[in-house]
Image (tube, rainbow, N blue to C red):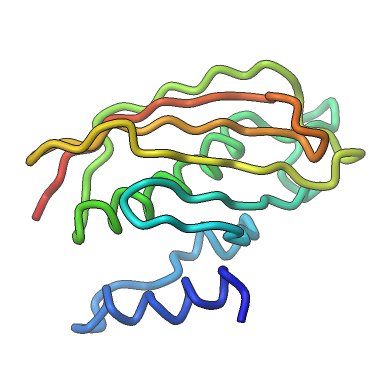
Length: 144
């Protein structure tokens, strides 16, 4: 069984009351495939290039890529906190474009620090060749 399928099966643990839509619709639309999950430490996801998410010059729209990053931060924070979190801030720095020729990119998010009330994380977005395309930082508030 793949890491991604194990993660999907494990979502049932977080949705015992059936109130959550897991995986979220945004993640389904963006096509995340989780490659590695270390609870409380990191998550790695593969994101396919989808032409309908491009800007007028034909490269992936930056805001959509930021959403892809957020859809990795979200589950990592939920797993780390063992409950819901609220994003306080997220900063993304773009270094190069995500192009159709790449086919996909890899997002690796890691927990930098967890306190009783907050989680601090960082993510790197890399091309299939390992080139750094973007990086992001986020601070989330633990709600539970």
